[in-house]
Length: 88
Image (cartoon, rainbow, N blue to C red; front, side):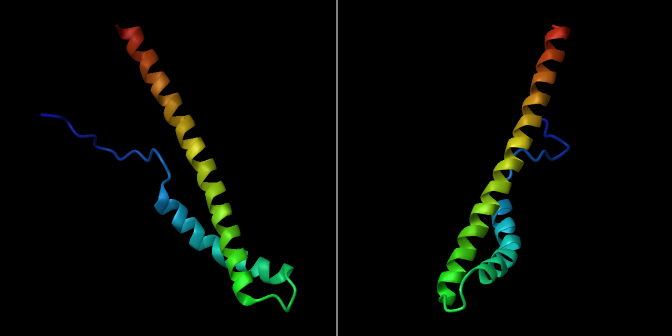
């Protein structure tokens, strides 16, 4: 019988994390686009620009979080290998 891990390890920030960030960034990005565009710019263009900038921002933050998580996971894995090598 395989023993299950007692604790949950968060090893990657996936699409759900990106979607939550997109929802969080959408408001500020739309407001920012409304501030920097001309008044006669179409609302559809403004919404599109805000959506794209929010998606890019969410992607960037998600990438940084994944890089940090992978770094810590690699560090932990190397420490476990080193500990196992000392025992054996």
